[in-house]
Image (tube, rainbow, N blue to C red; front, side, top):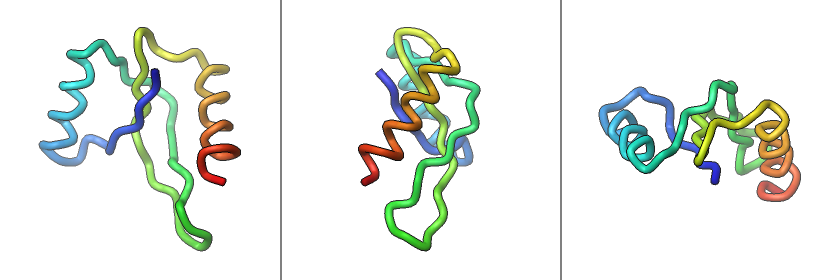
Length: 73
């Protein structure tokens, strides 16, 4: 299972990360930018969490490609 969460810039974001970690999620080290929802806008940085274990590079790349090619089209 893979989740995207906001960067840890607010107390709420930090609490959210802790909540997911208590449920067994792990923060992955890959720099991740969620694609923009509309043309002409920039994407935004998010953290990628997964469970039951951290993602390997190839699994992260497959997720990122699926997000761009399927979810966001």
